[in-house]
Amino acid sequence: MAEQFQRRDVLRLAAAGAALAVGGVQAQGSGWPTKPVTMVVPFPAGGGTDAFARPLSAQFGKVVGQTLVIDNRGGAGGTVGASIAAKGAPDGYMLFMGAVHHAIAPSIYPKLDYDIEKDFVPIMLLANVPQVVVVNPRRVTQPTIQEFIAYAKKNPGKLNYASAGAGTSHHLAGELFKLQTGTFITHIPYRGAGPMLQDLIAGNVDCGFDGLGSSAQHIKAGRIKALMVAGAKRNPAFPDVPCAAEVGLPDYTVTTWYGLWAPKGTPTDTVARITDDMRKSLATDELKTIWAQNGSEIPNLAGAPYGQFVSSEVKRWAAVVKASGAKLE
Image (cartoon, rainbow, N blue to C red):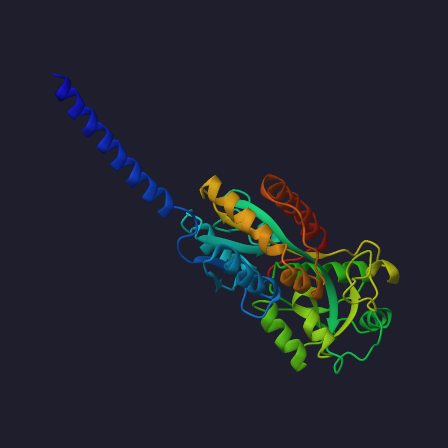
């Protein structure tokens, strides 16, 4: 009888050991990430989002040991890419790098098939850069923002401005500028900041409202000229460019921020791991340097506080859209 119990005990222990071994393999195999991660960037290559997404992708890949693949999906002011990402599998292998444009979109696009506040898990704010008024120096010869405004007032409709698309912060920055300066400048929307800047540099449009992230390199190279930073202080990367408050526009503040989301339902522990690894990436000297060169700050906002920030931005931009009369064109 004792021999029978001993045999049962041995079999029970063997079975338990096998289960533990299988469980251990499963636990190791499910550790995120075990394969490349895709990050949807909802604008064409060469824009402001790309200026941060690509170096972040390279650094993040080093931190986690897997490739972070950039998937550029431009169109409709960034809403096409957002829609694609919202429908992605909530397994940690689909991320979405959106921007302030996605807080504006609900007030501009009446029939979005996603909700930025409900269909995503907010991960963290990645970068925060001021908007800048830039011109093609061959088409716009006024050397200062004051002279540019004076010319625009005397010649309504003669100047045009390019944006990254209807409903983007570039568009709203232009409409706010017109509202606060009493000018009329024709809006020409593009499918992203990259194509917009190409035409501005080529001299096909007069001016643009853009984030420093995508304009910085072109300003430094002299391809375009910055007339004003939209905010209450000068930017350290461009100390010679006046800010709006200095030139009599104290309420003209427009910031382009970039943030990270995952599809709703992504596991909490995976989101925590992504957040931690993103923070490690942003803390590297390489990214600190690139962010500074692009005129950006590295924010410290993640999780629920970041989600609350996005919600506050949705409300703020709804009021701006109503006041400016901005609409799809």
